[in-house]
Amino acid sequence: MRVLLDTNVLVAAFATRGLCQDVLRLVLAEHSLLVSETILDELERALTDKLRAPARRAREIVAFIREHGEVVAPACPAPWPENDPDDRWIVAAALDGAADMLVTGDKELLRVNGEVTFQVVTPRGFWESVRIRSI
Image (cartoon, rainbow, N blue to C red):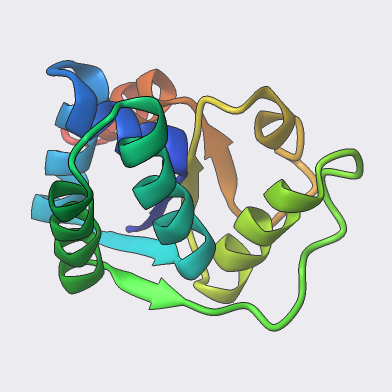
């Protein structure tokens, strides 16, 4: 399965032990990870600005994700969500990367479910969906 992990999921995966870390590990082990330059830039900023990670460590994390993921580069933003221009680039990346799922905690992105060709789910929704399929 082709899975795009939103910035908030990646930040949580590296910030704490828990569900998002498990989701990232599962995607890396059993699926294809999709990311975009937008997500990688946001990830680096969030790690340094919000979590106060050293800049070198943030760059290492971004390099790791770049190395283990497929970086998609949409040419233009998607039309959704209407009220968040930044999130339009995330949806565009999922569309251009032919994602099966976009995993996010962003409520605006969760609202585009049904407007797009892929599922938009929370980390918990992804975990439960994948675990049910493997039974």
